[in-house]
Amino acid sequence: MSGLGSLFFLTSFSLILYLCQDFISFKTHPMPIIAPSILSADFLNLGKDIEMLNNSQAEWIHIDVMDGVFVPNISYGIPILKAVRKATTKVLDVHLMIVQPERYFETFRDAGADILTFHYEASVHVHRSVALIHELGMKAGLVLNPHTPVNVLSEILPDLDMVLLMSVNPGFGGQKFIENTYNKIAALKQMIHATGKNILIEVDGGVDLTNAGKLIQTGVDVLVAGNTVFSSKDPKETIIQLLASR
Ligand code: DX5
Ligand code: ZN
Image 1 (cartoon, rainbow, N blue to C red):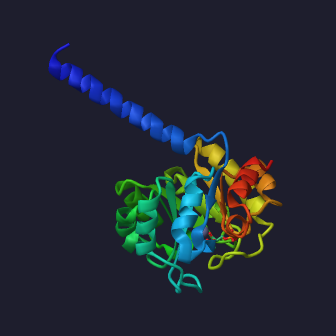
Image 2: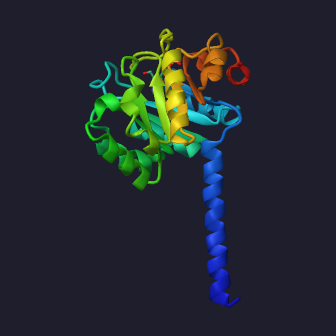
């Protein structure tokens, strides 16, 4: 094989390996993923909490961005995300609870987001927004509020990497889990199965040690947990218990 031929072969081989790795790491998880939400972290000691997560079995860190317009609360934004990015190599799962989210996709990518999820209820051009997130090199997730039926996803589902089902009304940590979420998970699981794709289901709000097992059994791939992790006396152990819930 000529020098150029070998180079072409090696480059193609590396590219295929890279794509497979990406597929494996995001799409086929034998275990559920725990994504602690730093909304419930100690902001005066955020570095310590990120270090604790770095040493934990949580694979993702969930970042809740609220604008005081789409939801009745304001949390944090770009500077916090940048700081967290510097302190961890974990997957940063950024949940945008903001109006006109597409205006900020590139900024969040530059600040370190790996996954961007935005609300169906806050977006007029969902298909365009999903394409833009992919063009920017991130995974794309669409979020549904508790009242939004999963069948609104019928046309966009194959384009998504993940669906985030809100199991509380967005805006605050520490709220009570809404039981109807189980019905939505089951219906969504069937819709995903019909696409033939491995699209992740994430659930966010009121997740604790009493419901994590049923959520995993019903088909959830990613459990967001704020209060349950950060109000625990032993957050790392709580993450292990959430993971082991069945
Ligand atoms: C709510 C946020 C959640 C919240 C979850 O609007 O999207 O991520 O932090 O908090 P807990 O787990 O405490 O319900
Ligand atoms: Zn969230």
